[in-house]
Image 1 (cartoon, rainbow, N blue to C red):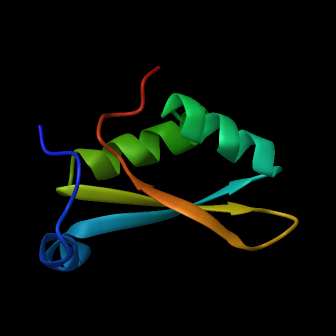
Image 2 (cartoon, rainbow, N blue to C red):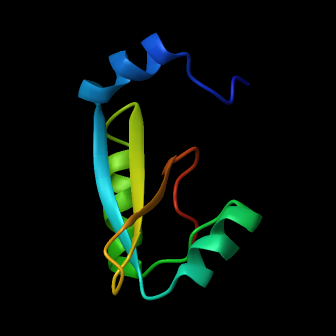
Length: 83
């Protein structure tokens, strides 16, 4: 399974994608997510993410910390959000 995009593939995917800004209350949650390759979220968000994942080829998550309001990273969903 290919785990990366070339620059051209990434650019072509941008118009066939949904985007979500994921806000965390602290940076530690983002660090834990990076370590384990998973993100914990609410059931409402889980439903929205799964709907997006099943509707378009790519779903991108943009991570920020609420109080800092800075970009902290991004990811592409590779599986549906588990229950």
